[in-house]
Image (cartoon, rainbow, N blue to C red; front, side):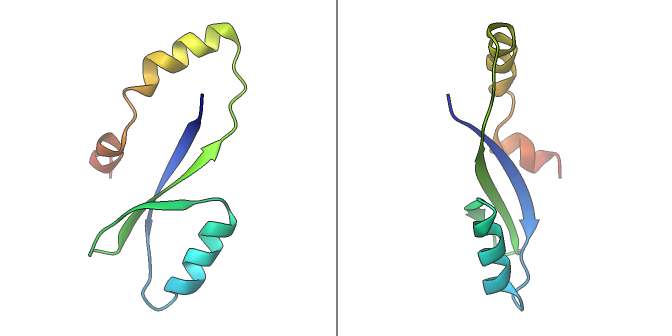
Length: 73
């Protein structure tokens, strides 16, 4: 199963090209952009899971979504 981590980031219009290139080289992909310069990026993470952890991971994965991340800011 693929897992992702998310990052909320404020982009600067002055350094936009450089910041996007830097984030992209680190594996981050933009998934949301707002006019307030706030963007959400995601990248795939490698997860090593044992059978016991897989059950816990499935229980909590539904609680983590973009809406909850935005509410935490």
